[in-house]
Length: 80
Image (cartoon, rainbow, N blue to C red; front, top):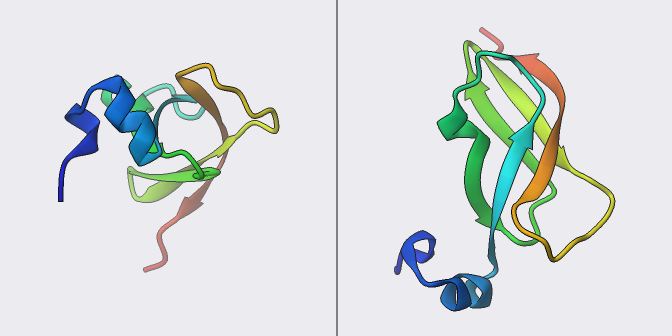
């Protein structure tokens, strides 16, 4: 399987992958976790962070501008 994250922008778009930025959430969430590539249809992102998951959701407005912003909606803890 080809890694589309390293492909040129035309190939990435054809594969349905977009650049996103995660906004809000814990202040200590590293910058490298806040920038990623996800499938175009993705509406929610869940990040493992310090014994729990940080949840981010795409805004209601659909835009062609990249990166797309996903905003923090809450945190859940991992059940033990």
